[in-house]
Image (cartoon, rainbow, N blue to C red; front, side, top):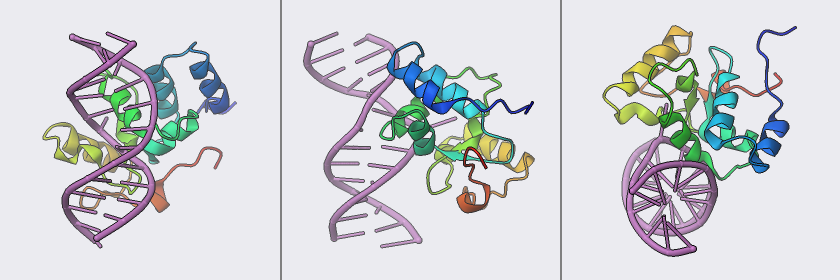
Length: 122
DNA sequence: GGCATGACATTGC
DNA sequence: AGCAATGCCATGC
């Protein structure tokens, strides 16, 4: 039916707890579900996986991705909408460019979370 | 098993 | 509004 195959988050969280899934794979699954033109905060990704306090580990998982991955890591920002990688000379500008390419307005390394923030199921 | 390392969040000033 | 301090927890040595 829908082309966006949104994963069953509770199931992912359960699989994570049962250790049937590795943390970084679970993070990858969630991030891959974010529609183009929408963004999510690190804390939100962690919360969807049942670990609201593991926001930092989301970044850790994304950092472990391969350079040529198809996972849309650029759709993950800080809760306030700022780009976490803004200090990174290579990935920072790259992320901003990728977001703009999807129609997301990036002003001063920030996006309007209220406008482009994604909430599963809406 | 213990310790250090982060692409964060929250709180307090 | 911005900055520093503290808590978090998966990974790797």
